[in-house]
Image 1 (cartoon, rainbow, N blue to C red):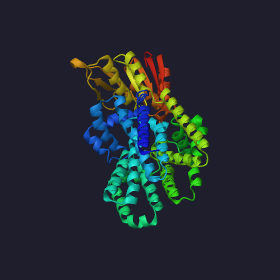
Image 2: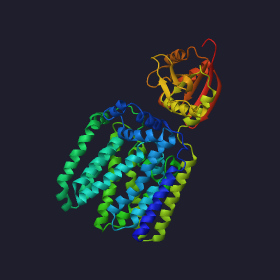
Image 3: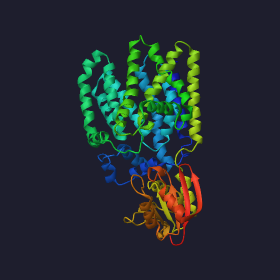
Image 4: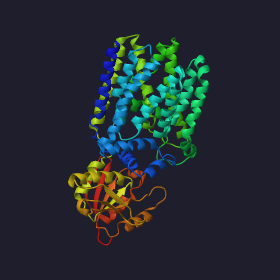
Length: 515
């Protein structure tokens, strides 16, 4: 294929990637982490900057770069997610560029890797989510590209860009630090002559990487080495690998198709077998396998102390996985183009099947519909109990959007917290100076110790003076696994209405006289 044809084909693939990422961008309701992204990015400057050193905070740099975008584009879900679409699309040409660096002798491999990245249902899902995951993929691709360029060509500019992109990746998602030991291993795959020339610059770059990481390491290291309850279950290594393969091959929520992931998995070792006598090929494959496996094993070792596995935390190894699949397909093509074509066609069909499922199935908690339902029916004196309490942030976000539709002149909602032990008020400022309010309360945290008697007594105090109580329930097991809050309402109130949405259930109760 001539160079102009490759350029036009790559441009077509990039256009396809953008179209797949922007289509149905607002189909899913924002979930709590996406609402958090808006809250953190639009909060006070002091609070935002404090996140860079505050223990337990993840992604402060993402929120910092998101802030000016939201200022320009607005606070809609579409605007938030379009920020991720941009980086999700940029990951496609960067995958192409990196594969060209790794396999300069195979002009078709970079294009195939770009096609797989463009149509990857998992990459598309997180390119449509208002979080840092598409950005961290881009930064890791830049880091790997500049790292390999610096090792082979030298030049302080390349080392500086490598250090900057890697440091940025760590501050966008703290687990991107697992890329650094992978890159240390990759250094061993470089020829001995290159190692002799570059070792001083390589050591200096590692030292400079440590400096910007120290504020994070100060709290991450003690946290990682201290056993504690994290809210995650421990996942054995074999189940972790199965989860990664299923998600990275088929997209989110596709556990019933795990068998189909074998189509991609069987291609991973094919390139090693076919190119086992070609040193340049094996070196590139070794680099990709290091990028793929070292972060996975590193996270598994961390989970032995603090369980915290979820597939999206390792999304930055997905480009290596796709590149290995592309390499395996071309290795098979050297034996049989027909078989390779059938495998690639089957993988692409599975990609589009996963995309169709993601685009047609509501998978995120639907606070958009739940909020509209409650807002259209609640009276000013009704009490809203949020179980879990964190659901209130999503409710408040969509309540502001609902009021903008009903009363277009509404200004931004203001959250006024009350003192401990009292209900709080949410008071949107409306045109003309009038105030609309709703009464709300945090649901009880009954896990780990609170008995039924204490929970019921707390519910009596919480609902005192109320006639109508709404229970807005989502992820209840995290806060009230025994369902004591709802059990008290069932015993002491009459259920007037209920509605169930994806991930959110709404109940409207009338308290009985004398309660």
